[in-house]
Length: 405
Image (tube, rainbow, N blue to C red; front, side, top):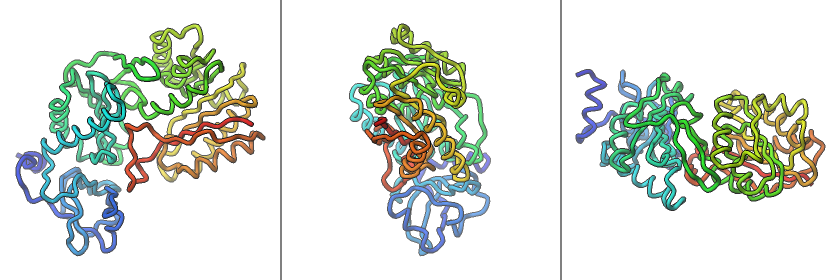
């Protein structure tokens, strides 16, 4: 048995975990509840530990901080799973944490069968994302440690909710930072080509194997409801629409017509399928094209409401200046296209763009558009993507509703 297999086999026994020692005075953030230690904060670690091994983290004066994953090849060198020295990271541990996360979502959305079940660090399962779609589950192991324990996690999922099928997606961009490579989806049990889910704001078809993220954007769930309430009798542009979440919600709430725009043909196929599933063909149509080019040349029709939900322009801090310029240009074009009283819903899904940076960008865009706006709402991600107070990194989605005055 090789060393990696030995490490996995030891997980169901009481073991002495490798010890990782922090540099002096680096423990304050972790003692406040943050779950990451960075590579430049590590003073000592045993040589040749494999990426993702479970280890114990100590302060420079040998005080226990937490048990979690160590990755000598990642900027995030340590991810805390437990603050308890007597808690082993085994199948029982994952079953307990998954049950706690499931119960939390049941409280947020009583009776719902589709939601973000596990949101990584916010559920004290760093590097693990699980979405539930009725009787099916989509899983992303973003950290090397979670990837190493895939079989244990799958077993815990099956014990907690007994799904018909589980799909493991290994295509998240953040995996590369952990030294993980992309791989084809792994299916356990039955996985249909598409499934259908019902939410408060519509019925949606989901492609679990090739759809964006794990197939659907649950993080905008509550925001769709907030915007839809402002759309009865209005015309709407759903830009960067993907499968049409905002536009479907608006049309069901009484919008008189909705145009869906995306540059992805598969996304628009999903959007069209969702329009038909919700019986909204008389008020909705899809347009394939680049949103920025469309807005730059002026839309051929006028809209009372514009939703802008672009991809994450700022994948890292070094991309932040260029990302803010792109957001500014895009939002200025949308602002210029709206009539007095018109509504702009603008989103950013990068945690590198802070709330204040996002608002400053919108102020610059408004100035460039020669329009004045009132802020109706500033919102974040849906409740099933909770924010860990000690970790600003878990607050990534900014969603603003503005009105032209």
